[in-house]
Length: 380
Image (cartoon, rainbow, N blue to C red; front, side, top):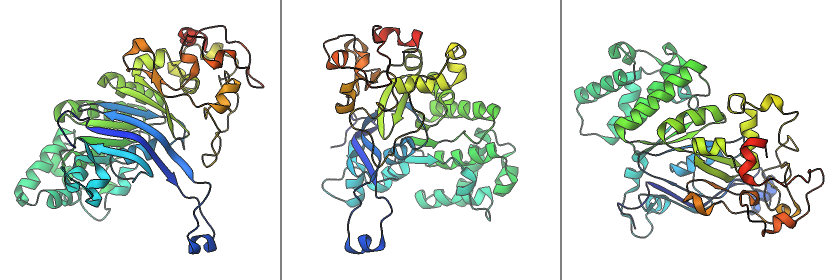
């Protein structure tokens, strides 16, 4: 049941598996692919009101799929996605008791695409493009009320004079102006959550900062929560740190670490997070001293046939035999109050776990004398 105490968004053991291309005969007889791509594979995550979660990871890790699933644009294969306690897909399918109609959920969960220009009709002015969602979702507004509201929002995001921008076509806008137009369109719905999918990746550095600052200002004014998807750890840090939000690190469909921005970056507990930190020059001042990156292999395994146990064990410089067979749960230390969680056996100093007595894999240096508390200082 939905309720005021429920998280704004609640993802429980979410799975999204995509069937690979099959032959004509297999499709005809309805045979399912045995090697489905496990884009998201068992992720649980809560998003509260006025919250920010920045999802990071390499291309193909599942961060965009998870974001789209969270805002109801991708149906999960397994698990559940709830908005204010209401299962989104049960509301869409009208199964069981529905406390929040699907149309209200759909309006409350919006997205800003990586390429906003592709979502703007090139044959319509900005005013006409922005009027369309208002006509659909707020049919009671008069034409003048719609125009006044759109002009006010354009000015609010720095597109002034608004009359001039409202009469332009998409090709007459810069990349940053198209991004602001997409943001206005999302905000016109008065959403609770906006998925910003690589929303600043196509902008130069100065515009990235301006756009992220705008997102933060609008979050305060409209009480909007953001799911920010990025392959750039610096961008994720900038947004999450200033919003008091979290960074979630994904690898091969799984959330392997999540926590407050500075805590996660200064004390990364998963080896994959340490790789991302090392690869981001301005986040690791000791990078120049390192002779090589903290990873055994560069290539990412096939997502349709991921490794057993901990999926990072094929690349991890600290993997032991137990990592091949056992998948560590995403958990926090007892003293963390669940604010910082990771799925790695090494984050616990107790040496009773089988990991510490398990032999290292071939090619892994047996240098596990340091405890995880030293990880941010020695590259462990």
